[in-house]
Image (cartoon, rainbow, N blue to C red; front, top):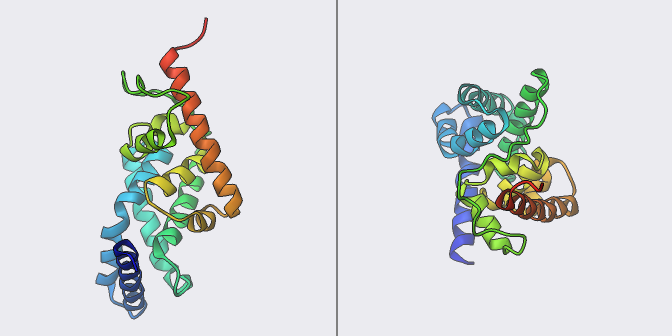
Amino acid sequence: MSQKGLINRMDHDDEAQLIEDILDGEAEAYAVLVRRYQGPIYALMTRMCKNIEDASDLTQETFVVAYEKMDRFKNGSRFFPWLYTIGLNIGRDYLRKRGRAEVSSCDLPDGFIENLSSESSTDEVINGIDSGLILNAMDALGIGTREALMLRYQQGMSIKDISGVLGISVSSVKMKISRGLDKLRVIFVHIKNGPSL
């Protein structure tokens, strides 16, 4: 087994034990999972609601709901995809209640995309996703495509796990990722060249 595979297996075993402890009533075990995953859940909420106070509240709500539903967690599954699904649903409810449409902003920092073009390699686009510098451009992709890209390239989730989180088929996940990367290249070119007259 590779070093990375061994670490992932240890994390999975560690989480299985933590979840068993939580179900046995040990609140501190849940605090470990909160500390481990509050960053990615807060980032999700910030992307969705664009308001740091609401993002904080929604992050807290996600962990409260997950705790309340812990007895429904499927033994042997990975915790983070399950938690992320709960967060995604809470974020969607937030947007629905406020009657807010998807944001389609492409306001990027000056000079960000000088070196990007429609011929940019997938690695260049992915590095942009990983650096967090193109989050505004990603708003134009719609939530499903954006989250598929974030889950794959920021969180390192497998295609199968993303399929479970988003509630779509594996082939749909692959298509969203491929089309999302293509759309980002187009956005880069559009912003780099400026609006046509």
